[in-house]
Image (cartoon, rainbow, N blue to C red; front, side):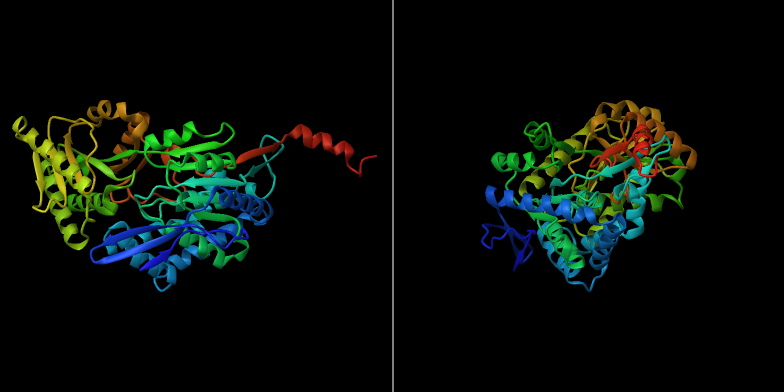
Length: 483
């Protein structure tokens, strides 16, 4: 089976070199064919997108853009639509994730981009979305308008399906032309979305492009970066540092690198009635895309003092992961991933000799692992792929010194706690560098308008243009109605 990927505006050429990416899962194989442009062709694409951004996209009102995106998302949510059927059929093969995990994950994720959610997104960042359409009065006097860039280039990573939506939709909302580089690990979804947007509104045909090039192609990247107003990059910290080193000083670079997330479970949630719900939600956060997102948990800190002990919580979690494995099997791992997991688990098993209270739980196939630890609140990442630590603690203050040194890497915390603890702990965790606090079970499903890594999604893309009160007042003397 062969599927065409990517999206190109009309640059007056019909011949393009293509790259074939091959994916295999079980007994099915998919060949993905994606355009691989020469530097000259890429220059034409950028010029086309830049021109369409200035002449077409910026003529839309923000309300019209929201409506176009909403219509496209509506069709992706419809399981009878062509693109949704493609997604449900091909993404499990391309990514290796369970079909139901893909289906449920897509539905949950796409719902965050419906009209009402996009409206919240705009208000969250801008306060007044009309700032994107026209100069708006300011409380202090004068007027301001939010001006989006002509071209935003997105360097996407592919550890989670449809992840490019955040930055691509943000670019559209600020009326920027968008050029996206798809990852080799999941090159399909962003191209489908681009085609769907153009089907909904044909005038967007030249306002975006979805292409591929080999990461680290310095000649091609340097040319693209020089012609971009903003570059949004996702990936490992080393690759992002390399990009930043090659970024022109005139190009704004917004990197989103590797992050670590964890959970905290209060004794208040640990009784015979409430514990099962907390365990179930924690397990959901572990199995969704096998912990490949920055918001996926590596550790659950579980407090002593509840009717259910931290060790019992770990055993319940192991049981729930086994139940999920039967319904939603983990994707098949590469040899490197399997070796890494086996080595990690072996190291953890060795700790039992020095601390008999520790436990390492897992099934014979090594589909998942739960490590329980006492008397050691250290903060170390897991090997992912349904590998999780449960660490007992007494007070939140005991945890803080161990997570604080990792400030630059912290992102999401999933919490099960009472209202007083929620706000008290949020204050303390925020001071250590955590930027998002949510409920267990919601760690992998950020709300619309969340502050990604503590930043504004839209404000980082725009420039504010101010008309100061003095200019407004001065202009009055030149009005035709003045004698």
